[in-house]
Image (cartoon, rainbow, N blue to C red; front, side, top):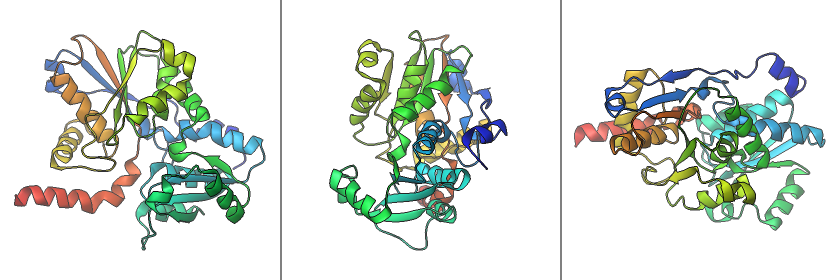
Length: 319
């Protein structure tokens, strides 16, 4: 396939994913309306927010003559998965700098990325925290030659522009729009894409996610940040940290999926919806308000979490 525009004209990405009303007595009895934008259906490989964050980065890399993408992520990263697929589809070589030591056999996420042609370079966790260090990047360029750097999670100004464009096209009524937060890029794009009468609420999936607030402020820009008082990040529903989960979260996901026939995963979407439900029950939203939740995808990661989820279920039965 030649070029992003050709891909788009061939309907490679579904830009009109459905919006569904959640029918649940817990929500209805609270007097609010909950809608879900099923963005995980937009594409098999760039599920959810990943396409919106990658799109303009891919165009920028191509415009400037780069043939290689280098990015960062954990071993189960949705971003690593999507970037590897982007390389395969759009003709880029890809390099994934992976947090932690190599473990063989590769998990499903890295196995897929490897099959797409991605090369891996592993960094111990201490070094990974300094991933944007000038010397480290210089060494990576010595090893791999020139590359277009896509930040962890794909989050940069171009990613924010892609999300802003996506959100600005949602033409239904809502009062609040919600998304999970890992790096803050999706929330920043949402803030820029909505009018000031609506409120944006992010749910941190990370323990100690206070830094996300500063990230978002930087991404939306100083002037925008000063006048944008219609957003917040809730830090209460991380369940112990990134990719951490317990039986309470798994039980909620099981119930939600059974009643709504919508798949969730426990890293991003599951935590967001748990948080939304809990806030609804606590009266955080006013009666008559409409909440729009963006399902940002990440379902590919379920394959690698099957055993962990199974152990949590078994442990609950035993105890």
